[in-house]
Image 1: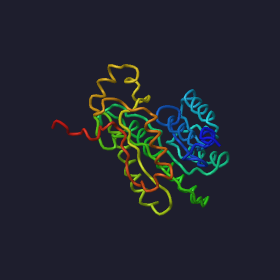
Image 2: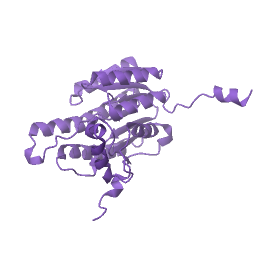
Image 3: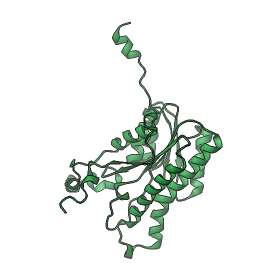
Image 4: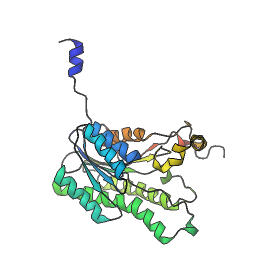
Length: 272
């Protein structure tokens, strides 16, 4: 057989083949990119949406085009009952998920503490912290009940703002900092159970949270000046890292944060 024929017959390695993943907030941005990239790597996907029907349909079609199975579940992750429904649908239609990506989140109110209502604070904390907590809790419970022995992974999408404070973002920064510590504590709890738990902390990424920078090149140029590489990230760059962390290649990476920020975290304090 010629080398040419041999090369054509080589089957590409799919690092997540046979896996089932839940990716929350997969109707746009980072979550959408992760869900699609996981499917390209062989995983069947549970995708969730809150209100963006058009975005979730784009994600669903892209996953179906890879040949992988996909189900869509409507979700308000402040509600434990919604999260329980995600797992029920996953089990009935796909099987037991062994990858969880907690990506769904909302940005800050933009208000300082003195101006923020209790209701506004509660809305952000329940969405950005309670939601991932509920998902982690159910993910681990279902794995235990199923006696699933496969490698499993939890990836929480936090932010550089788990470390960097920002005026008008105490709600967002507090939730992301708490999610970081939830990740670290959980990593200790499951360290001997064949489950890895890690954070990805993106910096500035061109998603709907940064819509002004997407729409206005002048705004984007101004904002990236604090980033050493002088550009914003793309959702696909976060997705590739998530694939790696969920794969068998990363089984010894546990209880840590992967910053994907163009060097932003290294820039803090420069010029002081």
